[in-house]
Image (cartoon, rainbow, N blue to C red; front, side):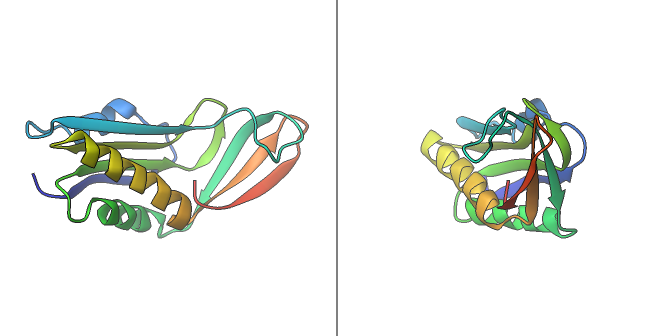
Length: 143
């Protein structure tokens, strides 16, 4: 198996974990790790209950997402599928889905973690947090 990013997508539609797992399916992979980042109902900076996040992306975000995944998988045998959702997401909806397959678990976990950390650091996606009382707050770069 050689390093590959089989799916890197910015999407306005709900994300499917099964689609990402299927994308990295390989008979040479002894491990598949996944990460699902979901909208939660609270935030340390929020005065009220969080009801939604509204994600906005730069037009080049999909290319940037591919570069993030390629960088995380570089020098490994990992296969990566990753998507980030944009638009309004309610509590419980998936904002990020990552699946990584590799011959061994350590590599799969390491690459998966690096993908999400790089998304948080480098992906030009911004979120506006919406609280139950209507208060909103923008939350920097990343997912």
